[in-house]
Image (tube, rainbow, N blue to C red; front, side, top):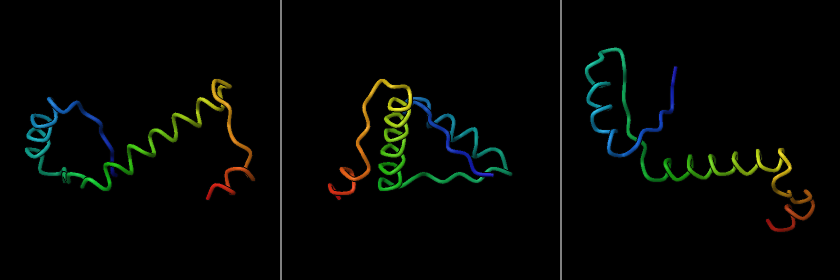
Length: 68
């Protein structure tokens, strides 16, 4: 199983040290490109949820596709 855990920067070092002591846990730090991807994805999900809640207006599909 893979998990994505978000931890405040000031707590990350001690958390990683704790995980490294567990022999059955494999840790891998994300590279900058992956980190930016996940941040963008997180923002996109927030925006979709706002649209679903009616707090933000979405774009028609045709308009969206024309922007590409």
